[in-house]
Length: 254
Image (tube, rainbow, N blue to C red; front, side):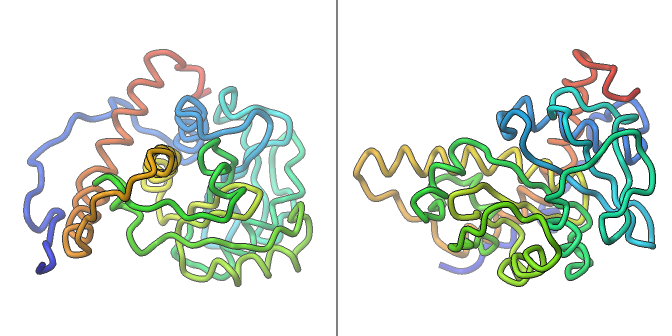
């Protein structure tokens, strides 16, 4: 089957519903924490998101001790490219090395998301990457990888550099017996892909339980669907998720 182009080259909306407010980088990142917590991506106290915030490589990161569903913009800390505190009133996780080394090696990875969503970790426990069993899973086509070795807490630069090397250029990586890392150039794309991966894993897991082979989605169709999802869907997913969040939790911007 020929490759289907998809994306905004085929169709692009004239106008889309706005969020209604202009967000600073810190406010956008705080929204991402709460959106993903609502979608079940977070595991109580676990996980961290970093976002590069200037040309020096400084990055926002969540503080140690706050759950994702209670993070507000003013809670965020800033660390330098080596993880040293620049600003903020709280401590940060010693696992920041997961992020600093990825940011150092991957200029495209301006946002790095890490946590332990349930169905991701089910597959991580048995060393399985999710099959693409539904069209939305096409957004991960060619981007999924598995890191098989479990090294415990990534709490020093050497372990962080080793993990970054294993990840390479992949943008969605399941870590054996651990969780997942999602990288993206923007907070919008990072949030959309993170919010979608656990459902993709759940669908793959449930199909495995059925004991039936899933219907094949041709590679050329996956290619076009991936472009359509990411090019058309990222911003409207983000805007809708933020609007929903702000209706219920406007304090996230404080």
